[in-house]
Amino acid sequence: MEIAREQSRIAIQEFTAEASTEATARMEKLDEKVVDELSARGLLEDFDEPAFQILLHKTQLHAATTSEDADHELLSKLLSERAGKSSKPIHMVVTRAVEVVEYIDPEALMGMMFLWVIVGIGPT
Image (cartoon, rainbow, N blue to C red; front, side, top):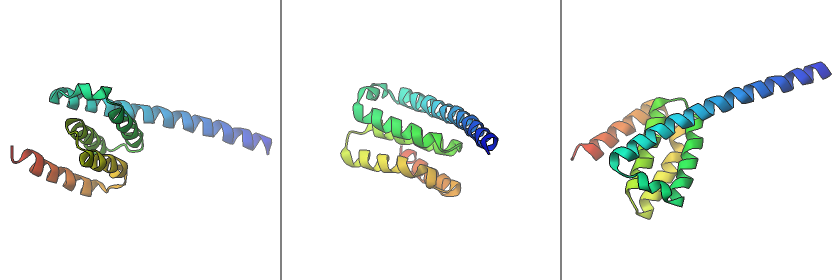
């Protein structure tokens, strides 16, 4: 029984290390997208805002839970939209959107991104 318990502890530690490595890689991937997006829009100064830093941290945690590139793309776009706006309703909507991205079906997510492109970029 002791041998089995020790083996299960070792297995848990190994899986935890693997999960931690994967989560870190996913967060770094998101960070690169966010910095690129904010840099392109000239919004890097928003990193000095505490509320933005808190939302960035929450977004990183949500990015760690998904391996979907579309999810990471959407999360970076949401942060970019939040950085560009100073209104509280926008902040509230973006914060909630960040929380639910991981639960959205990939096809629905693609549809939402398509709609965002049409509405956001189409008129310009």
